[in-house]
Length: 343
Ligand code: KG4
Ligand code: ZN
Image 1 (tube, rainbow, N blue to C red):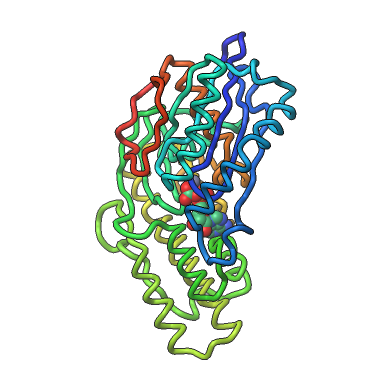
Image 2 (tube, protein in one colour):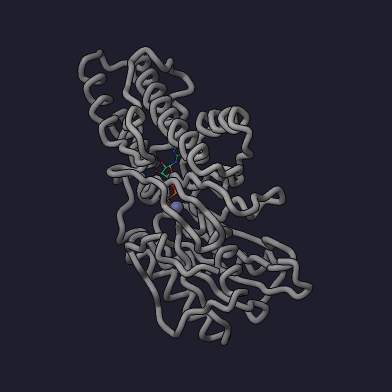
């Protein structure tokens, strides 16, 4: 990053329902990014339809590439490397980005890198001017993952705890369906929760009363169903259920973060992944960081959820360190984060 020469990396994200492209410059930082969300495409189905997602990525990849290069004032030949999300994610969606990214790198004769989607999320706060130094504790909360990670450096990840069943974002999405809010669920539940009263119904804070740093969110669904079945279906009940559900998730994450900070002695807390966009969670974790005397870092809101910038950033760091992929199209629907090579 401190080098005087620029190394420009195109990042491509297509692991789920957003097509994200970006160019990160090792000297000047993020030059441009563009995102196409497939929300409209999947809304009628109440969730992501994998085949439709893959086809839409294919449709959008090249127009977004042109858009992002033009916004950065670059031509294709100015790119020094291509990084694409290789997993975890939907295999067809991953293959769309991987094939495009790998082919482009081959055509331009530049190195390509297969990026781990969750490493992208984990490093997203490093795109900001006020960025965390290593080591830090990371709370990674997305639609597919809830993990507490001891981050010693890029690729040096110790998983301290994780969800044994549903991820936090998945729980938001399922509860959204129960409340008739449809897809995408997290932001809709959060908006409804703002109008409700937490505490009218009392939900558990799962696994907080026993030692350890693992999570379990699937039981909260049952509580939501039970409360909804036992009360008349009206706007107040739904808002109060949303508020208490959100409060239960936030407090559970907070208890485990506090425990992990105390156990590790780490002085910085990084929170990333789609659920880190949640306002109630952001403010609760800010209070926690003040109480514990640590600093907390979040990505900017648009980089909490899936985006190309985080992939360009992670890819740039690894490519600069000489880690390039052989000539193959890599797609790993399942890919444990703690198997990545350290930098
Ligand atoms: O990181 P992300 O974009 O995709 C995955 O890697 O999974 O995260 C998407 C998840 C979804 O489950 C979505 O409902 C949740 O993040 N989410 C939120 C909010 N915004 C997105 N959950 C709660 N509150 C939000 N404001
Ligand atoms: Zn994601």
